[in-house]
Amino acid sequence: MKGKLPDFAPFRLRGVWALAVLVLLAAVAVSAQTPDALSQAHAMHLQLLRTPVAERQRANYDRIVAVLAPLWSNPRNPDADSARFEAASLYVARARDLHDPAAYALAAQTFLALLRASPYTAYRRNAEFALAQIQIFHLHEPRAAAVWLRDFDQRYPADLRADVARREARGLKVPEPEYLTASETLRTVPASSPPAERAVALPPAPPPSVAPRSSKRLAVHIGNLNGVQVFSNANGTSVVVALRREAPFTRGAIPQRHLTYFDISARGAPRSRGAGDATLRVDDGRVVSIRIADHRSGQTRLVIETRAGAHTDRGRYFPNPARLIIGITGAGGADAGRQAPARPAQPALPLSSGGDSLTRALGLKIGRIVLDPGHGGHDTGTIGADDLLEKNVVLDVALRLGKLLRQRLGVEVLYTRHNDTFIPLEERTAIANRARADLFVSIHANSNPDPQARGIETYYLDLTNNAQALAVAARENASSDRSIHDLGSLVRTITLHDKMEESHELARDLQRHLSATSNEPDRGVKSAPFVVLIGAQMPSVLAEISFLSNPGDDRRLRTSAYRQRLAEGLYQGLLQYIHSLSGTRTAALAGSQR
Image (cartoon, rainbow, N blue to C red; front, top):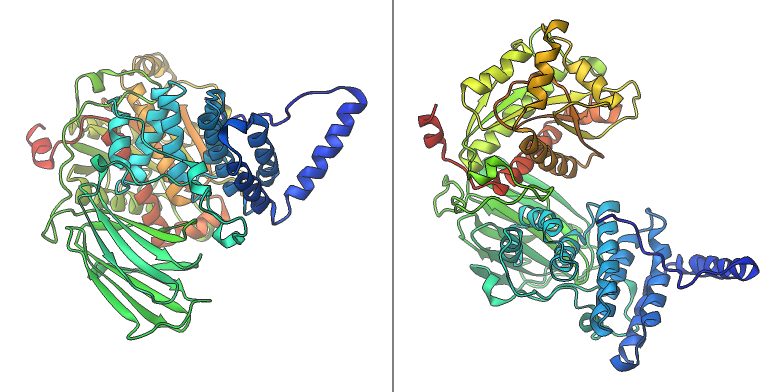
């Protein structure tokens, strides 16, 4: 489905009447961009809710959407995401209230536009889930829905709806879950609600079949915190921090003590009574305990102590009601060093294109991954400002990624180089072939004559006519010893490459997560004839993790924190790809099959 937004004009006129209508619409657009446009839409919706369903008309819903639409015409408008999300929920309400199937398509288009225009929106979790349900139950597009469901499962493994998303992605039949019941949500909101208390449609609690394994609650009123609830299941832990209002926060960590802390602004909050601290014992195999205390003037500190091997994410603020949600994955056992529980074997998911591959049909698994830090030795790769060398950056990121893969997944990780050594391009895939690797990931940093160019690109092996892709390939292939005489055999190897589809799938997953985690522009998945990928007997990709030629990227690539984020993005992409297959082999089993 394409992300084209619906045309909100109810009719088309010609001549003078058309000009008059355009002038009127322009006036409405200007007024709708005032700060109270979202409140105006809420008031209109509340008025509609007071009207009996039998008396409502399609135009009632469309008029509210017309008020919201100008808010997202300016992507910098702080209410753009809220307006799109609410417009989509209005279309869902129209579909349900008026039994209007066409409105579900409009809702899907609007959710899709939100996710594409603002991939890091606070509404992503609910928009993804709702879009997938509409695609499954009303648009009959289960394969399109599977893409969102798999992403939902990977991003929010501790969400109460993750089990439903996982089963739907596998093609299992489940009853249509509740989602975005906007009319029921808004019915309880007073018309005079201030902007900070605006309600938007959020899904109700899922059915008991997806209830968490356990939950714990801490009633606390310190600073802007109104309480903490912890949800745990086999896939992860969610810490939900209820807030009195939206409050800025910062994150820090003390890795050697397995502590992650969030300093949350207490501005505007009443003074805390009593000791001003509280502790919740969790002991769910990932989280040991959570402590909250007045940290210093104007801030409240929330400290999460985890088991070794657990990973605490950056936390996200969600509005309506105001809350901070923190996800913890990994670990999962009662002992500090225990690996996360093995994912049960299951049929592989279809390719994102909707097709299947021999890899998926045979239930093949991932047990050994070869990481290839580009360049090395006399081959420095791109040189950034102040002599920052690509070969050193990508080696550091590769070593960080390997550590994550071993600790969290238990797979075997090999490197084409683990120090500053030159390895010929052809030898890199030969190393992977000799090791009987299941995946080959080559890591590079990009370059462009335009210093403003930035973003993430991921390549897989194929022929291309794209000039930019060929230019990147030419730069990375410069050290190859192949001659023109070899051109015919090279082309045959590429075109007969039976891992092309799986390589494309792996590239898509890496690209999506690497771009999201690094907060870098998504420049897309591309194909090119990289020599380093030719001859690989397993799915293989080349990731360009940032632009050393960009001054901003150059500064970020010098920091340990940014390199760790890049490694985390690559890990999450590999994790999503592996989860789309039939699981993993243990490192011990992989080693026995060399």
